[in-house]
Image (tube, rainbow, N blue to C red; front, side, top):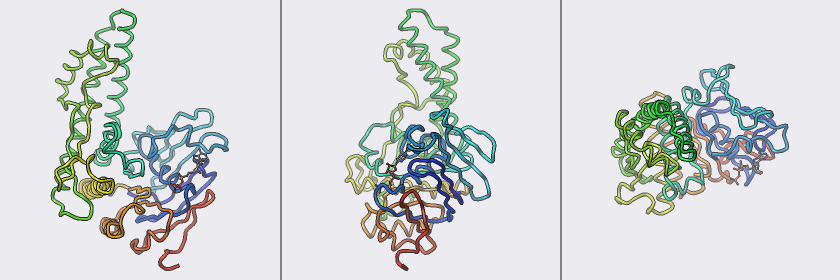
Length: 368
Ligand SMILES: Nc1ncnc2c1ncn2[C@@H]1O[C@H](COP(=O)(O)OP(=O)(O)OP(=O)(O)O)[C@@H](O)[C@H]1O
């Protein structure tokens, strides 16, 4: 899996930008605010969801542009995918695959993208939502249908919550058949979501356990909470929980309550208690092991976006990362302010400089 060409139109700081991309390591350097993360965000939008900043679509259109933006990519194998908005509907995401309109969830059939950003440094210490989104992205790379199940589950849950709130506020009984059909949809898609997450976590945990202890601390993974239930049990639990959920104003049972528990394997301690550096190494270890797992199972390595990761690694771990990236293959986008950080990057890496809304190739820093 690789992006071979990336075209941005009125996206963030870019008016027009066109990038011919190599299939291996792509290094983007430039000063603070130059637009490096914007490029990674553009690539992250070629998958379902809101991209690596989790931002609103209207924020992504260039602020002094005409409104609306486009991110278009050619993938290895000459598939064309693209996404963006129109000025007339700045919050409505448009997706095209090979020239035809498509749903955002359909993008996962073509490309899997995983990312690590500075904001994710707090993934283990903040709320479960971020870890769930991270987990779902790991799952999506292995099971492209996951996004559709998750979206249908959420849509049915929102409709049920609304119905229960109306019943509570008006005192008029909601149509029980309508509630039951929403709960049936939640149970069907919720069970599929929980099962797919469990498969991914089990496979990834086993894979990490088999690896020798190395420069990136090994994690043990498990799913906590959310009471993973089979379809029938989830349907019954939802039906039994109507009154309680109406009072709470939200659904209190189901896979939307699950959390990804991460343990520092060697220390047997929750990741949240590990040092900042250890937490980064744990995350990186998970993402690298996952890329190997996907390559083995799906036959294609996901695209990795590593935003400002190199700067936070000591020289030993940085060299180890470059070694692993070179050994694994696959397309990896990395950013940093200093070209010197990438002196030990594998031969064949593509080095680009980002400045003033443009992206230009540069000679490898060690050779310039
Ligand atoms: N919608 C927008 N329209 C125009 N410019 C924008 C928009 N959104 C963000 N920017 C600009 O993009 C720049 C940030 O780019 P980006 O985050 O990619 O920088 P960076 O090179 O990754 O920097 P750093 O090294 O500090 O992380 C800022 O100057 C910001 O003002």
